Amino acid sequence: MSTENNPGFNTRAIHAGQAFEPHTGAVVPPVHFSTTYAQDGISGLRNGYEYGRGTNPTRDSLQEQLAALEFGSHGLTFGSGLAAEDAIIRAVLRPGDHIVLGNDAYGGTYRLISRIFGDWGIGNTPVDMADTAAVEAAVAETGAKLVWLETPSNPMMKITDIEAIAGIAHAAGALLVVDNTFASPYLQQPLTMGADIVVHSTTKYIGGHSDVVGGAVVTSDDELAEKIGFMQFAAGGVNGPMDAFLTTRGLKTLGVRMDRHSDNAEQVAAWLLQRPEVEKVLYPGLEDHPGHELAKKQMKRFGGMVSVQFAGGEGAARTVAEATRVFTLAESLGGIESLMNYPSEMTHASVKGTELAVPENLLRLSVGIEDAEDLIADLEQAFAKLA
Image (cartoon, rainbow, N blue to C red; front, top):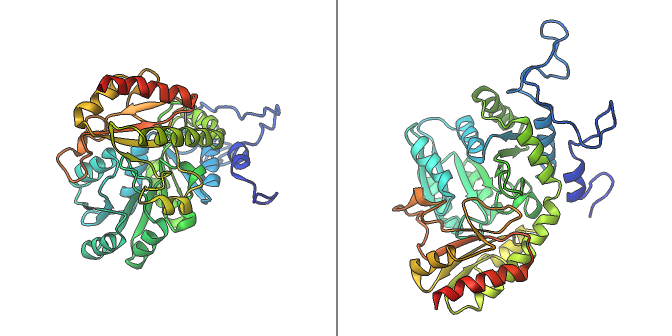
C-alpha cells in the first residue's frame, strides 16, 4: 500500500528525480547537452558537475528514477545493456575468477562472458537455474564469485527462485546479479529478494518505444556502486543526454504499459494453447508452466513475453515468422509494437552448437499494446499458411 512517505510505483516513476526546473518552473526537466561545466575557480565545481562523461544532470535524473523503482540506493546508466554488464564484470572479477550462469541466458550475455571475458581468464559454467541443487553444486565446485540469473529467462521463459539462489550465492561468498529486463521493475524487484545487483537493457520495456538503446545497473551496496561507477566514468560507456531523456520519458509510463502488455500476452498465450499446430507454449502465466506458482509469488503479473514451439518443426516456425503483418519480424523486444523473433538465427545465433542453443522450432513473441483481437487475427492468418 502506498503512503505519503512510501509512494506507489507509478508515482515514483513519474516524480523520482524529476523535480521541476527551478528558474522557469518547467514541469519537464530540461535536457542538458553540455559536455563541460564552468568552474568557480580551479576545482570549484558547481554541484559536482565537471565533464559530461562523468556527470550529466539528465543522466543523473534517470539514475535516481531507476534506483527508486528497483528499491535500490544507486542507479548507473550506460550506452547499452551489454555495456552495463561489461562494467559489472570488470568491476568485481579478475582473471581466474568464475561465473555460474543460466543455461538459457541471453545470447549476447553469453557471448560477452565466454568470448570476451573468457579470453581475459574468466571461466563460466552454464547450469539450469531452476535446479537449485545443481546451482549450489556448480558454485561450490567452481568457487564462483558471481552468479548470473535471468528470470523469466530469454527465450525459454524459465522462472528461478531469486531468494533461494541469493542464499546459495551468499553462503559461498558470491554475488548475485539478476537481469531484470524481461520483467521490468514494475513486475519484479530482485533487490528486495536478496540480489546484490540488478541489470537492465533499458532498450526494452523501460524505454518501451523501440527508439533508444541503453543499459542500467542498480544496487544498494555502496562499495559495489563505487566500483561500477568508476568503470562507468573511467571506461566511458555512458549514455548521452538525449538517450537518458528518452529513457526517462518511457519509464514514466512503464506501469500502464506493462499492465497492457500482460493483458495481451495472456490472451495470446491462451489462444496459442488451443492451436493444433503448437507443440508447446512457454508463458509463466499459464497454470501448467512449471514456474507458474513461483512467478505468482515473485512477480506482480506475468509480462509480455511469450515463446511458442511448433509441432511442424523449424519449417513451421519460419513460415509463421515470415507471414505476420501486425507482428514485425525483428530483433529486440519490449516496445509498444508487437515483435516476432526467430532466436535460433537472430538473437541467439551466437550460442548455436552450445548447450545454450535455442530449439529451432521456437518463436519468441514480444506482445505489444495493440488491440489483442488484432494480434490474434494476425496470428490466425499466419497460421493459415501452415495448412
